Every structure is written in C-alpha cells, then in structure tokens.
Image (cartoon, rainbow, N blue to C red; front, side, top):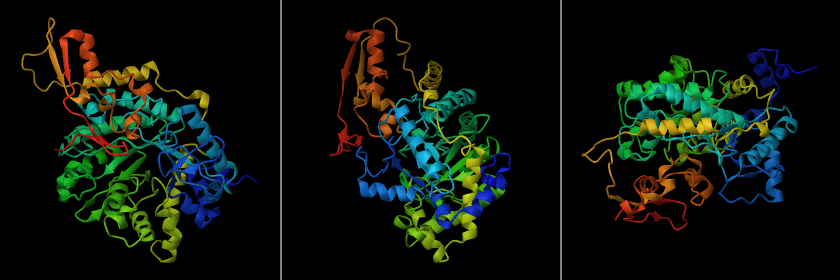
Length: 484
C-alpha cells in the first residue's frame, strides 16, 4: 500500500502529518539544516571547506555518505560554490538527489538554493546590474521582468530557492553592502521588492524568493557589517520593517532570512518577537525562515547570548528559524539540545512540518530531478532585459556643460576601475563573489568606461592614467584601495 505522503492526491497537510509520523528524530534534525558540498557526477561529494577542487578521501567520503543517508533540508549553492559548467553541475545535483530519493529510508528530496541578487550565481548565467540600478529605474514593471528572467534561469537549473532580494533600507553610504539595496526610501524599497518577488517566484510560485536581511541590517553602528543597531520600535517599524511587510502581504514571499546584527542586544537570529510575533502572527507569513550563513553560530561566537552550539541552535529554532544555512554547525547538536531540555520534540515537529510543506508544495516529491537538456542561460531576451535595466538606471548627477560630447574633444580618464571589468560587476556576480580574477570568458563581455570612450571618440582622443593600484592580500583573494 502506498504511504499517504507519497500520494499526490492527498492534501499537503495529510502528507506532512503522515511523513512526520514516520520520521526518526535524527531524520527530522537533518531537515533543519543544509549541506554545503562540492558535488560530483560520480557521487563522490565532499564538504566545502575551501575553494580547491580536490575531493574527499575514502574515509571522509564514507562518513559523509552515511550522514547524507539521514536526508537533508537543503543543498547550498550547487552551481555557485565552485567553477562548474551548468550541465555538469546539474548532473552532479541530480546524482545527489538520486541518493536522497533512493538511498535514504523515506526518500525525502533535497531543496537546492542559490544566490540570485544580480542574476543566478552560476558560471554561465546572465549578469544583471545591482539592486541600486533597479531602484534607479523607478520602474517596478521592468524590475519584475528582470526578476522573471532570473527566475527562469534558476528553475531551468533546478534551483528552488533564490537568496534575494535585499530589503535593507540604505542609511549610510559607508556600509559596504549599500550596492545590494534598492535605495534609501522605504516605500521605493518595498515596491521594488514586491516586483522582484513576484517576478522571481512566478505565477506558480515554484521558486522561493528570500527577503533579507531581516531587519535593520543597513543601520549598523559606524556602518560596519555585523555591528549593533540602535533604534526605537517606531523607526524600526516605519522605516525598516515596512518593505518586508509589503513583500510578505502583497507579494507572498516564500522565505525570510534574519540578519547578523543585534538590535539593542537582541540578535536577529534569536529574536522571537520579530521572527514569530511580527512575521508569522501579525503579518501571516507561512513560508520558511532560513539562517544567514553562519548566523546561528554567531549567537555563541559573537553575540555571547549562548554558551555553545547546542544552545545557539535551540535559541534560533525556538525563536522562529526553520533551516540553518549553509551547513549544520549548530543543528548537528539538536539531539543534545533536546536532551538538555533546551528545545522540545513538539517544537522540532512544528519546524520540520514547515520545510516539508514547502517541499510538497513545490512538487519536489513528484519531480525531484532537473532536465539538463532544458537548461536555459543567457538567452538574447534575458540579456536584453539586463541591458535595459542598465540603460534605464543611468543617473546624471551633475553636468557642467560637458555633456553631450560633441565634435572630437580630448578626454582624460583616471583611475584603476575605469578599465577593470570586474569592478563593474556586483559583489554577488559569479566572478566577483567567488573571488575569481582570471575568468576571461566571463569578463571579456564587459565593456569598461575606457573601452567605451575609446570606441566612441577614437583612441587618440583619450588620455588614460591608472592613478593607483589595488591593494591585494598575500593570498590574492581580496582587493581594495590602499588606506594610506
């Protein structure tokens, strides 16, 4: 007799209840975290600990395979973790999914998530302008079309959750993640966020958009990432919560990601008032809450509100978290947390039910695999939308009778970024986010300001001075300007 949870004719609630009743505690804990793996077509997957492409040894592989047989909630960035072409990456992801479906006791599929802030974080995907560009178009319909194209590329590769958009309201340009925001006006951010969510998720809502970073991340002390935030509830509600409320109520966003910082000593990953009272009870959010990468560990490593990983896991999941990303740093200690009375089995069931609900709703149990021959990346239509966003977002701040250029003027171009393709790409573009400086095949398609001016005016009319060089760390993986 077919189990109820395998019968697509039964209601999602019936299927969830039946599956939960069959799961061991360990299988439930496995649904509460992701694995960050470098996937292999032959099934020799390894944990991602660095950016090398070497695979784990036999003993390590055996240990990982045994742990994977408990299942997993999500797989972190199968295409956005290392340099792999889309078809190879999809085949490797399908191999992992085959293990989930056929080699685990209950056959619960994994959900694959990727970054998609400026396009799908994938080697061959279309690169879009930054969120500041989206905001500068003042055109939500255009932003929705852009997100639709990103969503199409994502679903064609098997991605079921995109970690975008960013709803932080810009308040201090010194904050290093300002480029990820739509701008400084809460209403503009909310309108653009709704457009992006509707476009990415599509009418079938078969790719989950993720609202981040919940909430007030851009208002940190000294504009430092992770630094504390100090503000009263009225400003929090009217300025920073507003875009999230709009995207939840109006666009039915599928997921929310809390932020790293604390607000008046209450870390976002353990704030039950924000994650449960406001988000679920007041706004009616029914999706899943996923951790920012490493955010749960910060509860004991940085914030000091927990003594160890088990207590951090209990604090976060009791507050309203559903899935720890990018891996199981704290979720692996859930059995200990239950034994210590820090979290109850009933709460575990409540959390796992939300993840299973989304997996059933997304159709993963019936359609767990991705057709590698249906992958669609960098179509001309998609590239044209990206080009339109770039064109429509250009903003002239001041013109001292210099534009438009007429005749054959001589133009001085100064600065290292004028001729650096990577400098024009967002931090969440594939080449930049993976700190890859030699991706000639990707950056060669980028026209730098210097290249454009030379083409427009002619080589002889342009004088270029680099001015200074970037500072690079000794390992070559970080770059910036010298501070003195």
